[in-house]
Amino acid sequence: MMKREPHQPTGPSGDSAPEIAAARLRLLAEASRALASGLDAEESLRRLARLVVPHLADACAVDVVEGDGVRRLTVTDRDPERAMRVVPGGFLPGPDDSAAALAKVLRGAGPVVVTDFGAPDPDDSFLAAQWGLYRTLGAETALIVPMRVRRQALGALTFLRRAPAAPFDEQERALAADLGHRAGLALDNARLYALQQYTAEQLQLSLLPDLTGLAHLDLAARYVAARERAEVGGDWYDAFPLPDGSAILAIGDVVGHDLAAAVRMGQLRNMLRALAYDSGDDPAGIMSRLDAVMLGLTSIELVTAVIARIETPAEGAWRLHWTNAGHLPPLLAQPGGHTLLLEEGHAPILGVDPALPRTTATIALPHGATLLLYTDGLIERPGEDIGRGLTRLRQHAATLAREPLDVFRDELLTRLSDDQHDDIAVLALRAP
Image 1: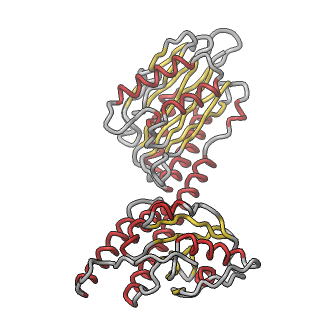
Image 2: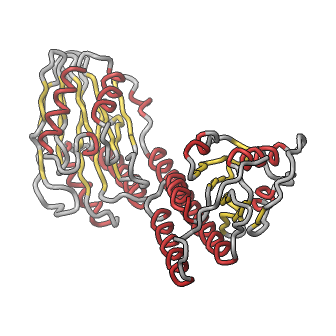
Image 3: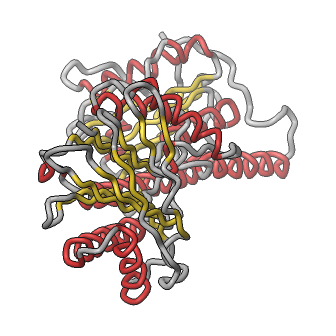
């Protein structure tokens, strides 16, 4: 026998009809804000469940369809001890053949009110799971509404009351249905946005280069998407051989954080490859030609970039030639712990004036030194002076300079991306 408890009304005792209606409108407004507060739909649904208890029900369960099954996302109860008896996150079997009211709602039925829970059926595991939920929470009445978008049920909200004499009235059923509809829209929008983000990230990753063609160089690279922004940026890097045996290393950032930025990044990288391979220019000449072509043939507006050429003679030190268009300075870390920011060869960003003069700087790479090209997401933090980020980078690079290059890259990302707010691209070279 399920335990019965007196039901708490949705408003103070003696409230007039207008006051009750106003309270329900406030609940709907608060629920709408909770559902629109972010792109994490699951957390928004948890907030919704906490809002409706106890104003509309004694308990609320949120179930979402995932593949062929159903996942119980959260269960909220006005009695915390009861809620602790239900472990959310578990998967229920597919609802296709179940006689449970929740299964019927997920198959397309409208809102359903259940007052007779019957007995569990050992041949219907979905129904048995629902019966166990009702029994654990002491429910006497359940109102189940779908989270439906474009005739597809994405999940359901189950509102539970423990007092048998407190059925859901017509206005409460309409309010619950409205909450289900809004929750479905929020879940659908978040999934669509996640799909767009995934598509953009996969496009960006597909545009990043394969470094296997430079097997004679010790290279390590990585692109890391921002953690807290459901967008993709224009960060990019590249490395490719030239006909004379030298190699080009490049990194940059196309302005924008969307799918268009990823596409423009791909255009820019392809133009750079063609100009560098065919022209024979030094890095400054390549950068100037890239600026002119970008302005004349594309809609790309502003770009920061570093273009470097590595000469690898059979004898003697390797030589680095580079130019910088408004980008962060490359970092050179030596095995002994000395670090150097390569601030020479700096000029304005691309997209301002192709006629601006640009220069190529040159340095011999010390034995065992590590050259690091990176984008601003590695060091910048909101409200912090960029100088602090550069100091932090130099300190960590100094302690990692003797590590294998893959370890150098991975540890640097781990130590510097704990508060990441932007995309990160890094490209590292280890001199022999």
